[in-house]
Image (cartoon, rainbow, N blue to C red; front, side, top):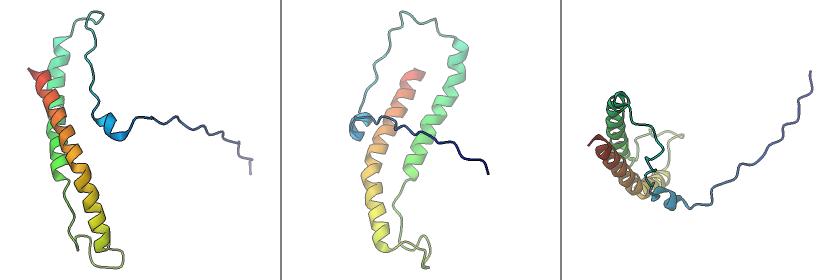
Amino acid sequence: MYPLPEIQRTRRPRAKVPLRAAADATVERPSRANLPPRDPRLAAAMMPLLRAQAINVNRHAAALRPFKYGEFGSGDAAPSEGHIQAVNELIKMLRGDLLRLTRKVTEAVNQSTT
């Protein structure tokens, strides 16, 4: 067998921004002074994609729902009621932020199409 070369692993720097702060960040519009004029064909091609993204993000957020006991079967591999309660609490906690962010996506799409 050939000897394996040693791989040097470097750690990527982690962001020091708290998770909630990143979700609340707002993006300022860049100055249009140095940008070329917009191609209307690009805007026409992007509108269906943007609308589809807004619809999909809302559908996926709405589909995130609490689990029911017994939904995954009743065998030994099935989660216990405690596991399901813990996951449901996590979903409940995260779903509010997710729905708020999906509203922002929808608002951004609506602003870009008007």
